[in-house]
Length: 520
Image (cartoon, rainbow, N blue to C red; front, top):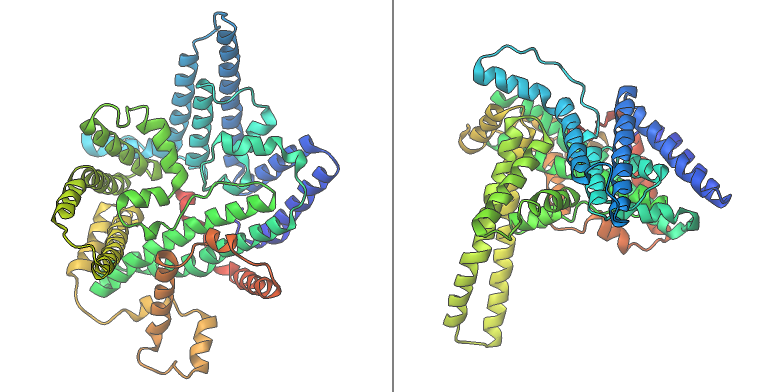
């Protein structure tokens, strides 16, 4: 089930809200958890009942691992010999989860690679990829490992099932941690409708919905045209397609996460923020502190630190970074283009960390030693220079990330190379009117007609550039949705704006697509 669907907005979520708070009001705390689990299973099973069976089996098996580790931990604490090595259990549990993920997501990629390298002819299985399997698998790995480490004690089955299946963040994250959600589940009986918090959650949901429906899908139409007609693109067309996808992906994924946080708040729960204006980053290190925050947190805690982190020397630290980005690329998709995307980020990340650790301090020391004046005009000049450098760094980081996204979106490395070659060396020709036509939204085209701008030669391109500039401003300059709702004053005017935005989104539902991260 999609957040951006009539069924979710008008049937599923109203039932969920009324049933949840009704049971809490009646004092049925345990039943309210079961109710949310049932609603989450309905939400997930609506896509495909086979997906539901896979997820339920995964929950059951991993809960068994949790119980085994909890029991053996208690035996060790009481100085009794455990029935089974805890280390063996956790190793088997992680191997089981990675094995399931490998089969459903990477098995065909593995066979096709073997066929290509060794000239074999293994038949591909065409294995069904369950939605969100990368997210709920990583979430369960973290839970089992934390149980092994003693960070999680005995967890009731209903709390664990809700932790994994909680529908707002089930399909496309964020990847939540047990310490963030289990305490909230335990306090569900204390929750009463907080109308201001519900209003804030609804506002955040609508803003996320607008990101997806009004912006991401609009940019997506241009992206689909560009990748489907590479041979017809000129240089400027290709550049625009690269920018369109960078904005489509941001508004699509961050829009989903905003909706997830908003839904959680309407249910009285706080889901961690997964994005913090990543296109405002001034370098690639800053970018990965802002983009997909919970995935970065997972790899840091469960891969980077166990590999030694920065404790085994500088060279080993840089190698660990590269391993993390290699796995990040592979996590996003079964293809060499995803691995290349990950390594493009990894190499620049290592170079940036080296610069910050070695080169920048040396240059800073030289500059400090050379400085001789402390006047007000010099401070103002330094401030202006710093701002210019900051803006330039932000733009360069955004452009590099946008170029790397081409390998993320393309069907393979060859297609990505073709688009980038056109962007850098393609023909200089008039912008494609077919590309511009992807942005001719009826509601905006009517405004152009009222202003008598529809007959101009450039009229077909006006909306494309207006929407592009608006997207760049929102992503790179303006406050993000979480910041806006944190300072929002819930007055009549605000309510009217949110209501109009919601109606606009609902009227646009018929042309929306699934979320991009459903594929990962």
